Length: 88
Image 1 (cartoon, rainbow, N blue to C red):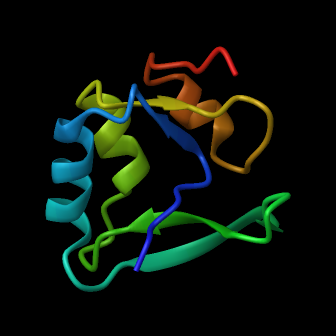
Image 2 (image 1 turned 180 degrees about the vertical axis):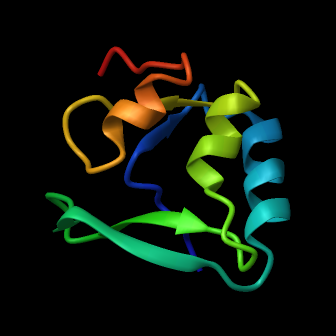
């Protein structure tokens, strides 16, 4: 199934970002609801974590493979503080 991350934007849909996301997510992830349950298209939005509790958002931003979403979210300040910030 498709994973759409609530708090990050993949940079230019780099194959490296997709590969890293698949590696981190494996077959199962833990989800944490964000401030909005769905986007304007009805897709579920959530923060994603590995089964070990590591934030996939933090890892992808830290690896330079994603940028933080700055408009909302309970983890916005933490994610923006990692340095990758989206202009969207």
